[in-house]
Length: 132
Image: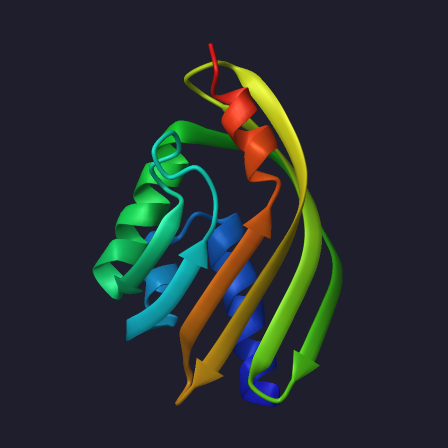
C-alpha cells in the first residue's frame, strides 16, 4: 500500500508541475488507458496502450489547455487500485472558454508502474468549450 501511495503522490505532483518525463515514467510500457468522449472533436480523448502514446496525450493536452484550478475531493485505495475524485476548471486556449467538471481517475499499479488508467469527466462540457 505504501508504494501505491508513493506513486499516487508522485503522479499528482508531476501532473501539477507538468513534469512530462517523470509523469510518463510512472507508467508501464504497455498500459490499458481510456478516456471516453468525442474523439473526433477532442484528439486527446480515447484509448492508448503504449507509453509513447501517453506522452503524446500530455503534450497535446498541455498545448491546448491552461489549468485554472483543480481540487482532489477523495482518494480511495484498494491494494494496488486507486480512485481519485475531484474537480477542475480549465481554459481551452483555442476558444478562451473555461470548462468546469468533476472527474474520476482510476488507476491500477503492477510491479511499481501504472498499468491501467481511466479518466471520467464531463466530456460533453469539454467538447462544448471547444466550439468557437
